[in-house]
Length: 178
Image 1 (cartoon, one colour):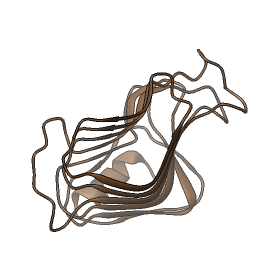
Image 2 (tube, helix red, strand yellow):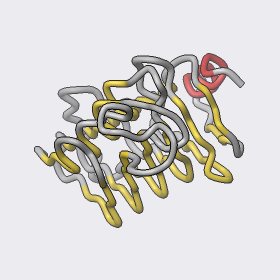
Image 3 (cartoon, helix red, strand yellow):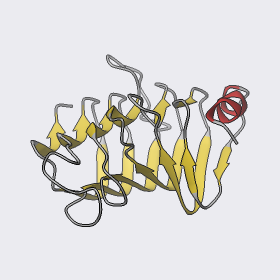
Image 4 (cartoon, helix red, strand yellow):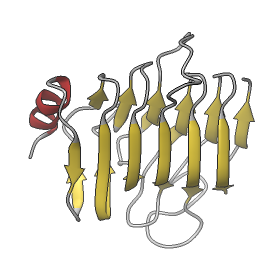
C-alpha cells in the first residue's frame, strides 16, 4: 500500500491499520479527520520519504495513534512526526489526541537523520509510553552518521506524557515550551 493510498483512505475518514513490517513512505501520512485511529500491529515501522515527516496530525480532536515505530530515513527529516501545525490553538481538553506505545528511532539498522523526532503544537495531547531514541549502537551509528537535535519538542499547552523516554540526542532530549 502506498502513502498516496493511505492518505486517500485517511482523507475519506477511514482508520488506518498498519500491518507488521517496514513501510517505506513515498510521502507524509496526513491525519486530518477528528477521531481517526492509526493502529500498528507487530510494531509496524514507518520510514519517511527524504526531507519529510512520516506523519502529520491536524489540530483536531480525538486522534488515537498506537503501536508503531517511526524510523528515520537516510535522507533526513525536519521532524519524524508533527501533531498540529505551528500556531495550533484548538481546545481539545474534552477529547484530546493521544499516542500509545509509539516509538521513534534515528539510526540503528542504517544511517539516518532527523532534526527532531516528535513535535507537538496541539493543546491537550496525551502521550502514554513513548520512547524517542537516537541510536547509540548498531549499524549506521556515529556522531555525524545519525545526527539528531532533539527528541520531543512541545509547544502546545496542557500536554501530558506518561512513561516518556528520550535518549542520546545531540542538543536536548526534551524541549518543553507549552
